[in-house]
Length: 110
Image 1 (cartoon, rainbow, N blue to C red):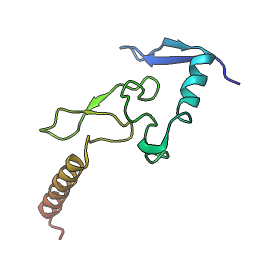
Image 2: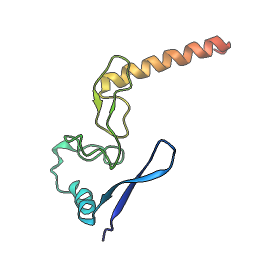
Image 3: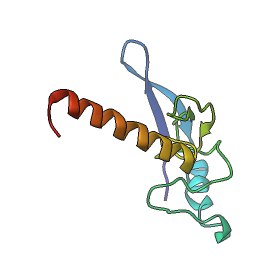
Image 4: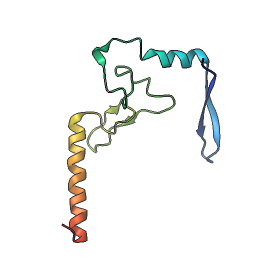
């Protein structure tokens, strides 16, 4: 059983305003959508969004964002990811590690 859901977002003053009302049918459809798929596009369901091929379904009310790497302009489709690909993730990890070591050396720690 589903109920009507109201989506609130803060305005410029920080007050919450109702931006969207989702009917029980829409909520039910979004919920059951993940079960009506074949498993050839299976991902880790604990942390990733269920619809891998459709970036328009990116959790309710969450905007798509660019990859966190400096040179990359691609859109990140997964809500829990910061980078768009494994290559960008590796590049970001290496950069962060270099920055961390540089800060540690500047403080005098080894």
